[in-house]
Each structure stands twice: as structure tokens, then as C-alpha cells.
Length: 326
Image (cartoon, rainbow, N blue to C red):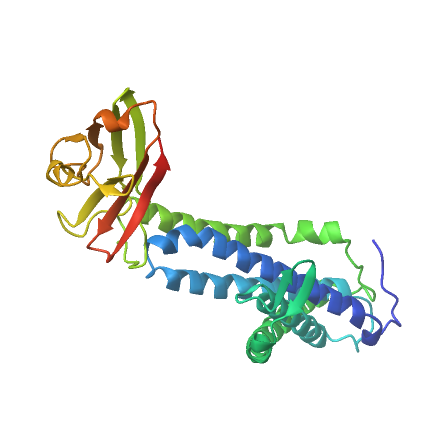
């Protein structure tokens, strides 16, 4: 293994320490983006579990900072030079980590600071001041946390290594691959902490163990239309099983043909269209519910615009789930 010269002081490796901290900031940003993606399906159903996500992010970030500090000690606090302090190394790496992460977070969060139009990049000056304040707050919070945990991790690692080298004056600097192997269990532990909690909660939500309490959740209902013969169209409704009604009879299906309401037989009689619907009460909101539209107006020689929308009175909105020609 490569050895660091004993006369190499801390200031000589400061650029490398900063680069290591920048790498840690990129790792943290990737981890946060990954958590946002993997948690999105869970939070669509239940907002109460967001606290679990917050605690998970705090815990995994602390572990990541600790590992970055220990690795910085292995990489830069070797040799016999006593002035090369592991605490200072951890602080320098922690500041760089916080700087890179806060910068990436501000640049990628909406509304975007930069816009791209017609091949020209422009700065949204209206949000520049507020983004600067946001960056300062984020940087300050993460700089304090990152410096504390990385310096503690570096000090702990350096102390353990000192105990193992009672008779050795110069400690060997491990290779990068060797360091990855040494930290394999901690890296695996972080991956497990990232993946397992949202999977467990998603399973709980989909199986009904955890209550769905997101008022903004929009059901993903769908319909399938097909011609059964030249003058008949079969409509099949497939409600989203993951968003049950909060009470019976609180959702209604409307069907329009060329902009005219044909939801029920009584409504069709006032539309002026030569159509009928079976059953006469129309397409009811329910699993495997179906209805058949019949009439000369639906002749296969012509295409007609059919639209199906659902009124969710229990959720307070309506949604178009089908709108196309057939």
C-alpha cells in the first residue's frame, strides 16, 4: 500500500480533503433524490407516514456523515505527523459536503433558478434573493451537522487506528478499493435503511394495515371501450382499488357522446340522440361495472367522441378518465 510521507502536513492535503467532502455532498444529494422517488408512491396514499421519512433521512444522513469522517481519517490522517488532526480533517470535509449538497438542492428545487428557452439560459432574478436565503439556511444547518458527525467519525477512526499501531511509527494509507471493502457492511447497512422502510410502509398501505389519509390523493380509475357490433359500444369501468369510497353512493359516472349527456336512459330521451343504454340507470361506479350504448348514431361507419368522467363527491372534485373517438 501507498504510504504518506511523515513530513506531509495537513495544508498539503486540504485540496484532497475538500474534494472528498464534495464527493460526500454528491452522495447525500443522490440519496435524498432517491428517497423522494421511492417515497412518492407511499405519500400519495398517506401523508402521516412522512414523519418516518423525515426520521429516516436524519438517521441515514448522520450515518453517512460518520462514514465520510472515518474514511477521511483513513485517507488523510496517516503517517507520523501529529499536526494532521482528524478533527480538523472532518470539519473541512463536512463544510465541503454541506456546500455541495445545499447548492445542488437549491439548483434542483422548484421553481428553478435557471430557465432554458430557445437555447438561452436565463436567471430568474425574482427568486434569486430568496434562493440565496434558502441556501444560507440549508448550508448552515447541514454544515453544523456534517462537521460534528464527520469530525467525530474521523476522531473515532483515528483513535482506533492509533491503538492498533503501538509499535508502528508510520501507518499505511489504504487503497480506495481496499477502503470500500473495509466499509462494505456500513455501506450495505445504509442501503438497507434506504430501501426497507418505504417498502414496508407501502406494503402496509396497499394491504389496508395503514390508513390512507392523503386528502389530495386522486384515484386512478380507468375504462375500456370496445364495439360489440356495428351499432353497440361496451363500456367497462375499472375503479382504483387503492382508493375506496368514504361512503356508499358518493361517486357518479357521467357519459357524453359528442358533448351530449347520455349517462342514463331518462337523460338520453332529452338529448335528441337515437340511443339507448343498458342498464337504464347507466354505468354505476363499482368494480367490473359495465354498460352498453346502442343506436344508429353509433354506426361503425362513423367515429364518435365519447367521454367518461367521474364525480367524486367524497373527495370534492371530478375527473375525466376517458375522452377519445371510437
